[in-house]
Length: 312
Image (cartoon, rainbow, N blue to C red):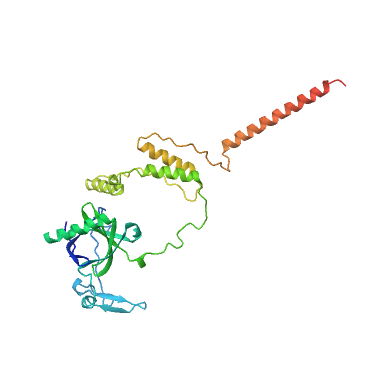
């Protein structure tokens, strides 16, 4: 794998020369923009707003825009003069339990590779120390012109680093939680636990991008001159429906178990009573009411007849 950054890990007075390589890669299908009339490629040109002329990459600089629109030019020399001790160093500042790192902070992932034979010993030392402590290292490093926060942890026999957002870059979840207060029953939680236990048995390594596969098949079909055949899609349910949560959970558990070839043994749940009667239910109710009235009339008539025959 090609390295994207060379430097060293600063571990107290220990310096470990390393190479930084990407731990992930994008597999999504990319598209180009074209002119729909003739299929010609559409490209972007960088044009100056003042004179309308196209600007070459060598003539493009940086600037900071003030609130009133004023541009303050910033040169590479200005940035190079700033004190940045982590320019070529991943500086470990603390060791903390992994649970203290908020997953919301995590960004890109990298592998740290020992750079050269002399780096093997201190690299192994840090790796084994992280293993034994069951902690992760929090570090500062600089990449692509700015200082960043990182988390070092061990993956197999390699030290991996996750780029982290700074704490003040995480928004507070204000106004996100449901505004209406609801109560969840124990029976509903039990079924939710059962569903979680069933779905939790999935081997994550077997998951794949179904949409990407469909896009690739569609492209292959069109490249051969054929027409793309869209796979059937599940029906969409309208929003705002009142659902029987217990029945939905029960069905989900049963479907998950059947998908694994297991016997779906789920406690039957009594469905919620509907306030509205269907035409069939209305007819049945009307018929039952009529029969009841008829029976009541017969009983009254029989009682009347018996009363007349009784001697004085």
